[in-house]
Image (cartoon, rainbow, N blue to C red; front, side, top):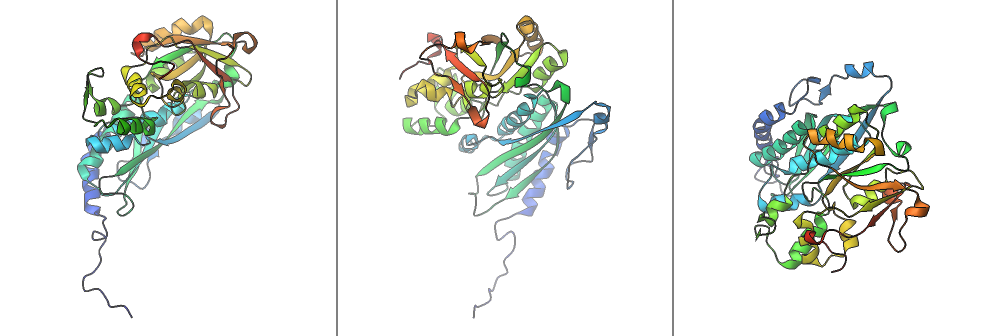
Length: 379
């Protein structure tokens, strides 16, 4: 027969501090208030976020679009650097810009933070980044959850995830069904590594014996600062193009898998996009390649290489699309064309198709990056 404990076991004694959770909510309130839309009903702290969907009744055939994601092992760098106010923007970018790919406007978002221990200031910093990302995207942050998992996560460990919902008219959905031969492919620049491929990056950095606070001259800052550069959010710029009705046929968010695999997902089966390596990837990509002697194929299949989004547009309106993007502060350049596979496929150059379970089109990357980019075909 067991002997009763002399001291009672409490929730706090088990590692969960509900008072710290309440303090975190108080600290994040101001940031969350800035990430709202007029349609939001109620305030922070409810059991569910509410969004007035009356506007949908005026649509002919509204289609809801939803997406969920996290930021992968980039959180490990945030934890190592003790910088937590940027990772939230990464989360928003990964979620809402997937919704824009369909032509939908993201409306609202919720987040989830799991941690080993609630440190109110740290949780508030994470949520401030989420709120800032929602502001940039014009998306309402309608709710979230912070869960303390002592014994499952170390006290200073955490992970973040989120989900968002948007809406688009059925007859305005973008995708492979709109793409035609002769369409032009435009590239939009990334702000750096974004939120993909950090398992490779972290392995390369560890093998080189570099510290995250190491200053790197070619980056103009520390390695950790470079790697924590927030993901660029394209939502508002791309929605301007969608609404302008300028022959935009398809969009692709360049995330895990790289440019070729993600572009292939939005091309019709049997079609080929030929992409020329005419741009210079930012220095961090060449640095990762040199430090780890990473083969170019592996680099391009893992990282965005300086292109965060691609747009497939009618050839006759490509320049006008670029003007609209520029007016929103978003650069773009022509990188390729949707061509006849029988005449455009270059012998001996690999073709990417059937990516991520989608029986879509094919993409062929040709040429070499400018020498100044420091990214080479062999290492």
